[in-house]
Image (cartoon, rainbow, N blue to C red):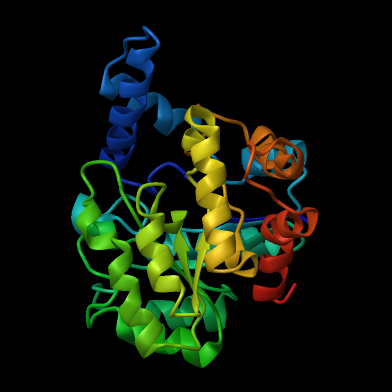
Length: 310
């Protein structure tokens, strides 16, 4: 069983267009290296149009092609920093929950809430107790630190309900701010909520994973996914393998989770190729770096299967 613990769905009016323009700025930078010249606005508008997948049809097709059994859907709440959208965050969460109910063998929905919203706890209760959502997604780059006081009421509820929390870590494109999501702020979550599974999305990033690893070695409830590492894997495969080996050696392979951050990296690598790259690690890693089949199997799905009680 392969489980993608980090995916997103975008429908029209769900996400502020400024987010897509920020992603476009990153993509056009990479494109220019290949001699392709497009404006941020043109690429951003294209992203909005091409990523409209409100019924998860593209995601499910992508999962079938890649051999992914289940995906975790992560709504994102950018409204307080980028402006609330046509579709309210309450409705966006409900629509994600509805899709998970429609495809119970393929999709799992977490709630996505900015903890600074006045009704954050009430919305979280509705998401879990009424709509059956199975975890919480937080995106600190909108302007809060993972360990600040507004976050703790949500974490306390997650502890009470025994459900995991997935939090963005590492860098983030403009107009969002990376300073809020650095690995060191996860240390307090390990100290104050030692029994709460906290997944550090992106493992702190390929340039921040070592600081995340320094937290994980002593805070055993901090877990990590490898979503958004595709670009590094393509650009510098030995560096990718070295980082993943370090995470497995010092945190334990049982605490590392496969993720794609789909659809964000479709332009650089398909999920089929991403899954295959992980599968091939035992036979294709550079000299001096070794992976076992059982480690790969755990990362690709075994660990998530246990965490999510599947």
